[in-house]
Length: 145
Image 1 (cartoon, rainbow, N blue to C red):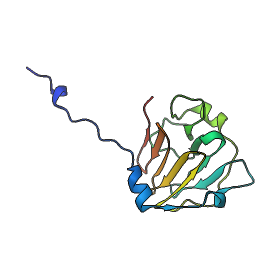
Image 2: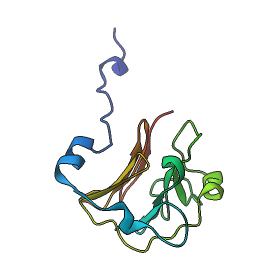
Image 3: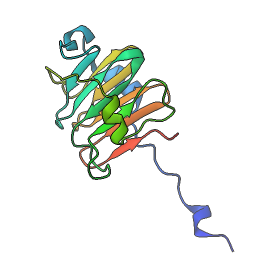
Image 4: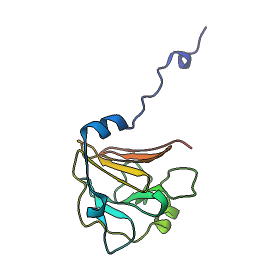
């Protein structure tokens, strides 16, 4: 007898198709997203997140991180970390950057080797190599370690 788990379908990859973003979304000029509040580029999202890409491609968002543990307000990856994460320590590592403009739906920004996109459904997707996160209106996914 074979266990039911042996016949289960693999979990679908929750992340957007990077080729679709590159082909179909609008690349914004990163220098339009510089602010006086901190180095790097900073943007807000339709979900109300404050997001940035800063030193050596570190990236993250602050705000209502859907599906994260209560009290969690930051998601991202900081250069030197081995995983993308959300936790209290990430809040301490975040620069004080504040967005001055929104990254519109169906657009993306690239800076220091990192790409962030606002999807058609207002979700936010950021990636740098194997490090990525995807914040949707109903949940958040982090790249596996």
